[in-house]
Image (cartoon, rainbow over all chains, first blue to last red; front, top):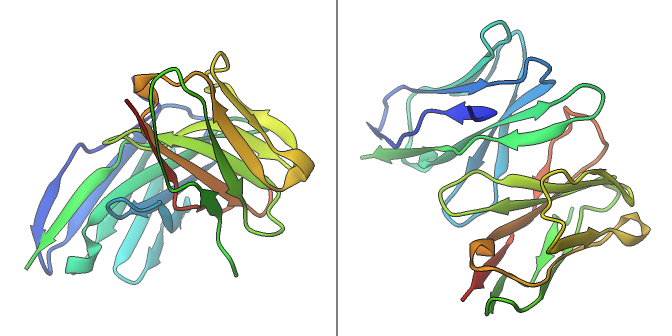
Length: 111
Length: 115
């Protein structure tokens, strides 16, 4: 089993749609969680951190369920510019940590 | 504020040759990471430095890969000798501190092709 697993995708959605991505992680000692966005042939950039209480940034909502070891990202009112790969990132370990990226979920938003 | 700088941006070599990549992190950032990203996969952590000490190198293939961060600033990653399966983008990232909640900022990467 992979340490961080994401929906395989790709997701093809029309503009204005709501889309949700899921991510599961294997290590219950994981410390912190993030969603990064990666455009084609570009470097990953932080989209948002994921907090236990859930957090929202404009059209983006992230949630964490530690009991189920599950993270989600919800994008509302999708824009063409949201087309990208979304990477789930988990910092695992106690004391020190190791950063583990999921394989990413590709999103295509079409007009 | 200047971002993470990497060079070269592209490199093509033949198998069994050697190659080196350079990274200059954001000024003042204590932690530096090297990742390997193979096409279609997420980045895989190769090595993590805090200042000039190695924090984690458990996924670094030490028979052929080496990395150093002299003086706790710039870093180099070397592959010697290269194999076909080393073809990937090598990403350098840095974070201000060494905490698990710190944001990692990535450089543009070096795209390596091994023929």
